[in-house]
Length: 459
Image (tube, rainbow, N blue to C red; front, side):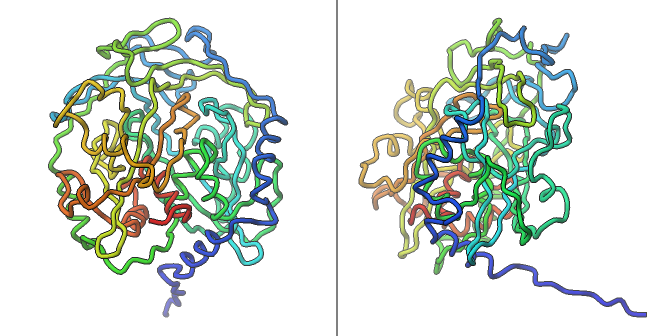
């Protein structure tokens, strides 16, 4: 007796071209781009949103645990704020302690796509998050922790979740990616894109957009949220490249060597024992007023699964700067990636932007102690800035966390083919290939890759 096997193509070779066609469409009859701002404003006005800071003592369901001092939810779910002791043995800050968010649940960041008039459209949501500086931003179709979509909060169902937890549709992308390694301890989310050919009942807080339209919105400050950006970065976008400075095998070998050469010791410790930080009635603060503070808020949103709730948030003290340097070698554009250590990474390093710093934390340093390329980016000639926008980070955990994102063209003198240790020139196509797999590219670099994947900037 023989078993008949049905073989399928290992790869959808048509998908990159379909994505390119969607990138080329800057308008759509389903949501004209010139009507988007009014639609977003209407969604914000239609619903009742409010966020207030409160003392820790007023947080219902959250408390500091006896003994450890860890800040936890009474259900034992969602996340905890704990302590971390980090020793990297190098750089201007070789050892430190800090609060960290420990959220072991793997959430879903999912975008539903459907073809209209021969063009792929992406179902995006006008979603309120308590930490967003403007509260409402453009989020994925689904943006939910496991606790949320399994309804630990006893709230309403997450809309469209069935496309990402069942078999209703064709999976185009599904990859685990890390979140902010400076603030999360080994946190991952599924970044998922699912295509459907079914009729989709459109909720009033959702709209269909082409990739070209989303790329245009990525040119605006604080419109497309972090969760959307990381999913868009994982799309297998086409890049027309006839070669690279380094082969893919050489790149992977360099990356493996970078992972192995760093000795990073990370230990979870009780929040009550974190040195250099002080807990007050309203916040947990660093003694130099650097980095971030832990605060508590009461949030209200009439269109969320739960209409009101309280929670802790991390509030950065200053703006960050994240930038890729770019330069063409042999006529092929390359970007300069940094093998970056972050305390919360599972594998010590991930590829980040050339520059990813909070400038104020390094203002007291000079000469060789200054972070590489930081001053080059901060003083860049405007004529060399290929992309610039302010984007906020994950609004469900971070309050007013914003960074200036840039792509800056380096001149001949600044673009050696042999950059300093820890840095490597690679093409956008090579970075796009690495994004098919988890734990290679950090969330800040993924924001800039979302810009390149949507073709809103041409290198």
